[in-house]
Image (cartoon, rainbow, N blue to C red; front, side, top):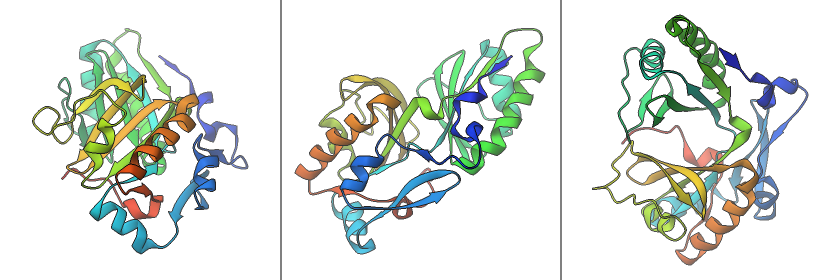
Length: 242
């Protein structure tokens, strides 16, 4: 098995602060930042009441590029066994992610999965994933790659979340097509990406890290037309399936 741990910001040392590709635009929009778990995170944009109104009455978006992101590759049976071992028996099916062990387990192909978690949970998961893949491998090749700094991430939240996504994304997230926990690869702002439906009014989108600033600009412009705007990490709370 190969593990490319050097790709994670944590590997550079505790003194290094990791930064999102959206930080500069977030700062220009009035974000207040705090260093948490080694990341400089936009925690709030102005008054909490304003952020609450955006989420409840219109639509809001938040930078979540700091999420831990792992890509697992292995033969389908090996991948399934490793995921089941770490999650306590979770099974992935095409197009549907599973929330387990404080993470989202997202099937990309039968032999490839993406794992998304908060930073602290991701640190704990990494060792468990490494061990589970090694145990299940049986002499086959498996790969665990930390792609945290390879994928920028953003949450859209509020009653207008699906409408906001439709302004710049070709992925169909109507509830009948993509229910809660639905996970879809596709064109996001004309670039390859992923969409995860975390809850009825909450979507997570991921694109290549180098396009994070571009994504922020596209989403910000579209949200403004819907009466929405940015919110900080503190407004989001803990992601739940709902």
